[in-house]
Length: 560
Image (tube, rainbow, N blue to C red; front, side, top):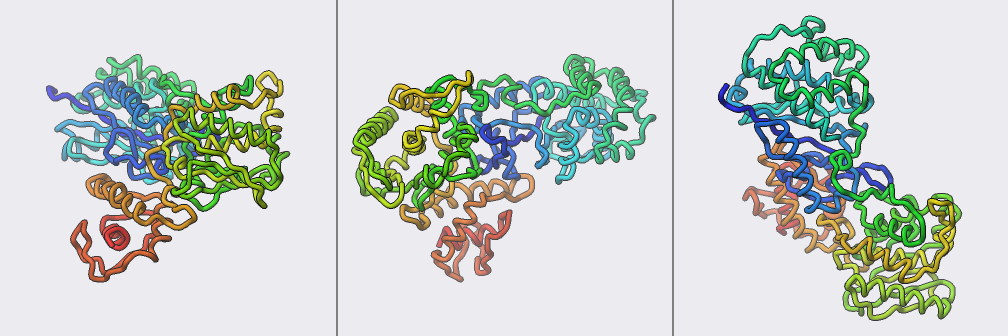
C-alpha cells in the first residue's frame, strides 16, 4: 500500500463553571464559526475541536495540543472554565476520520473496517469510561457500534466517546484506531481469536446496554489478538497504556482536560485564602468567569438598563462562590444588598450611591477614594461620587463605564457591597482558620482586585442585557444588525455543514419575540438572502432555524 492513510478527528468537550461545577452552554460563551478549529458545531452545549489531519496518529495528537495553545490566546475567557470530556447529561463524541482512496465508496471494505474498530477499539475504550456516562451517551443521537458516516475523503467513525480527556488516552485511541484501519487496508488475513469467542451481534448488545462485566470476559482474547496485528507494534507503548487501564478498570474520563494536557491555567477552586488581598483576588477572578447560570440569591439586584443584569449576575455568582455559605446564610439579601441602575449616556462620569440611612462623612470620604482609585488604575476617569438619602439602597453606574470592555462595573459594585458589609470579610476565615480582619483600603483591597482583572476582557459574544436600552426596551437596531452580521452568516455556513441546521441562543429568540411587535410587516417583501417570497411568516418558538424558516424571520425582523 503506497498511499498513506490519514487520520483526523473532531472530538467534543463540555465547559464547566469552576465556581459552581455546573455545565455552561457553549453558545452563551462565544458564537464561533462552525468550521473554525475551536468552536461550536450543531450542538449549543458542546465545544468541538478540529485539528489538522495527519498521516501519523501521534502527529494528530500534537496538532490537538497546538490547537489548544492557539485557542487559549484567542479565547482566554473560555479557558477560565473547566474542560470535561464526559458528562452524564450529554452525549459527547470523539469522532475519528480515516482518509484513503480505498475507503471512498467501498461498501464492503468499509463494513469490514468498521467491524474491526467495533470489535477491538470501541470495547477497550468503553472499559475506561465512567459506566453511568457510557449508558447516558448511548441514549443520544449517535455513539452506537457501527456508527459511521461516509465522506469524500473516506469515513468518519462516530462510535467513540471524547477521548481527549487526557493526552495519553488520546495517543492510545488514535494509535490503536489508525493501526487497525491500516491493517485492514493491507488485506492480510489474520487468525484472530475474539470473533470466535463472541458473536458480533452479541458484542453490540453488550456494548449498547453497558454490560461491562460480560465485556470484560472477552478482554484477554482481545489483548491476545492485538499482539498479533503487525501494524500496531509501532505504537505498542501508547496502546499498552489503554490496555493496562482497561485491565485495572481505571476510569480515564474524569480528568480536567487542560490539566491533563499540561496547559497553563488558573484553577480558581484551588486558590487559597491567607489574608484580605487573597480574598479580594479570588473574588476578582470569580467576577470574570463566563456563565449562563443565575445566582441563587440577589445580593445586588438589577434594574432594567443596558448590561446591568449581566453585571449583577457576575457579582452575585462571585459572592456565592467565594464567601462561605455559613456567613451568607446569616445575612439578608434585601437588607444587606442594593439595586444597580444605569445612568443615561448624557450624564457625567459619576457614580451615585443612594442609601436608606444617612451616611457618615468617613464612609463618603473612604468610598470615594476607593472608587476613584479603582477607576483610575483601570483607565477610567471618574468625575465624582454622589450620595443620596433614598427609600432604597441603589448604586447608579454611568453608561460610559458600562460600555467599557472590561469588568470595572462589576468591580465597583463588589467594592461598594463589601465596604457596606464589612462583617463578610471580617468573619471569613483564612486557610489557617484565622479571621480576615484587615483595613479595607487601596493597598489591601483595590490593588489586588485590579491585578486580578487587569488582563480580563468581556467575551466577544453579546449577551441579553447588551441589547437593553437604559430605562428598558429593546435596542432594535443593535439586535437586528447583530442578527444580520453575526447570526445569519453562521446559519449560511451550516448549509454546507453536517445537518444543515443551527441553533440560535434562547435569549436571542426571546429578544426577537419582544421586538417582533415593533417590526414592519410587508407581505410583499422579498427575502434579500435567498430572493424567495416571504409572505408566509413563521414564528420562532422552535429550537432550530433551518434555511427556509430563517429567510422568513430575517426578512421580517432584520430587513424590514
